[in-house]
Image (spheres, rainbow, N blue to C red):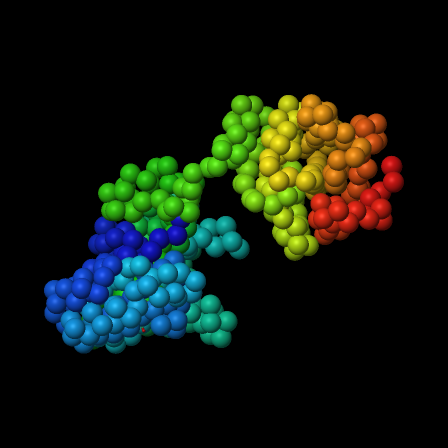
Length: 409
Ligand code: GDP
Ligand code: MN
């Protein structure tokens, strides 16, 4: 779950990272009051789930409370990077001596955790990584021991910091690491960490992302900080999705679920080794309109396939079915064929005339093909690419079935 800047800062605050004084506001009047309380020039920042707000006009300054009100009025309600601005963070404007970049995250290459820091903060760190990779310092952390003081020291000296600023940076690194680990974050980034004229190191911006699979144990603690699951993460399942979930849950064997409802006309049963997302993309790329997304994998029994297929075929607006998978090594293709055919027969659908694109291969494929042949369902073999299979499925529901697209059994 990606957090807003103000939420990220609540997390940092809870572990003692120094922050600018500030307040979250939703109206120009509140912005004026906030600036009044702060009693100095302020920065007003749009709270949207995107970075690069500065360049997009989402970070502005005001010298007086009246000006803050005016600027807030101009910012609230506008669209920035595709988001409507509903809230602003009004903070004291820091006197910047230097901007640092700091982030705790995971690294794919080493499959480990690390802290990165750079003295080239404030800008897009990817640019720094490309143009001047030597300016990004990295410290890799072990899996079992937290960040050690010597590692913080290594980073701070690596950035060329000295004296009071160096100590302040070390302290910030250790606290950031604490937040990263204890909140199950996948990313905890401060960009910029501002070195102030009087030698403090303050988190002027923050960006934290929490591992979704850890939310079950973080929810309570996050809730105490006023951080709640996003609507887009907690969108209640539709009745169609609920039924699919129930089918998947009713039997522990294999996956035949993870269903998402869409308004289109092409029912989908897709999967195997990343095949589901790839095939879904291929369908979209070819102008298809999926009625659903539904993964199959891990050798689900015939009964699950049967119930899901039935659910999909009965969905209003569904005009055809695409059963498409990668080459299965661990799932029986004949189970897939059996379940699909049984669902059709049950619904009184003639499999030989119903628009169906079947492209699956792997374990027990010969048995599967024999069943399909028996019921007059033509199928595509493993030599047909995802792209071609998806195109065939899309044309099929558009009523443009081309005999070339189908293999003669
Ligand atoms: P982002 O563009 O979404 O990453 O938003 P940031 O919060 O990082 O702000 C972008 C830039 O605005 C920073 O890199 C700073 O240069 C500037 N900025 C943000 N807050 C302050 C502040 O308190 N004082 C000053 N002088 N500049 C700031
Ligand atoms: Mn930033």
